[in-house]
Amino acid sequence: MLLVALGWLYVVGMYSATQETFVAGAASFLFAGLLPAAVMVWFALRRMRGLRAALPQPSVAVADQHAHQRDGGDAKRDQ
Image (cartoon, rainbow, N blue to C red):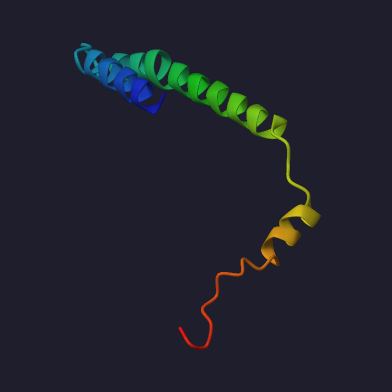
């Protein structure tokens, strides 16, 4: 998604550079480049936040149990 946004900004930037005045170029870059890209990134981040919230969260007791569990793979004194 980042690559698409960067490509879009590049194309719009090249288009804006060919405008006759600086104000027209800046306005076309703002309204045809930055605003649509910002909306696209905002929707993507909002969707990722919703997907992350839908994932089940592990309980603290299970995480604590795995942290204190011994694996029995320690070397003995003669090894």
